[in-house]
Length: 198
Image 1 (cartoon, helix red, strand yellow):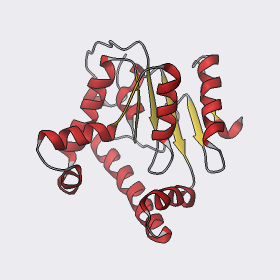
Image 2 (cartoon, rainbow, N blue to C red):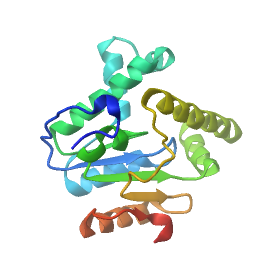
Image 3 (tube, rainbow, N blue to C red):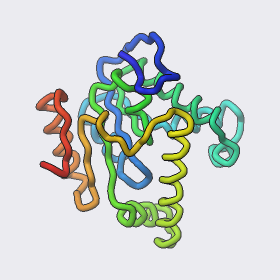
Image 4 (cartoon, helix red, strand yellow):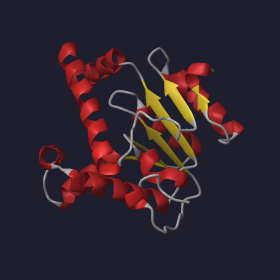
């Protein structure tokens, strides 16, 4: 088994019985779904954001300060720590690209998305910000992230063939997503499913 990212392709021991990865852009609901899966399976949940915060703690600065100063070195360190921690014990990992980082080590790779306006509404609601401003910021963040991952790893995060399950939840309730994932997990993970086609 190996990562889908060349720089992380090296011999590693997988101690975890099961690893589930949930990828997606800001406001896609990946954290909410990841927590549900972790609770359902009785395993740990963490996010790539947790790794980012642990690096900030190591440097004795806030995660906000680290975000302002972070460059390629920090992003790569976050992804490497995500890979190493996930291999240690059964878990569900959410972030922008843990499925790429974990690659074949992940037993179920899920991609969540929603249209830009819907994601901006969700972010605006939890951060109490102007919707138009949030939509503009979210669109820019999406573009910046795509460019960064292409630059760092040579991957296109809009390429979805690596995922076992793709969910566009623009018009989908959280409960419907949870039921879909439960069904997919119960039926096995041998084939790729696009929730837009179910």
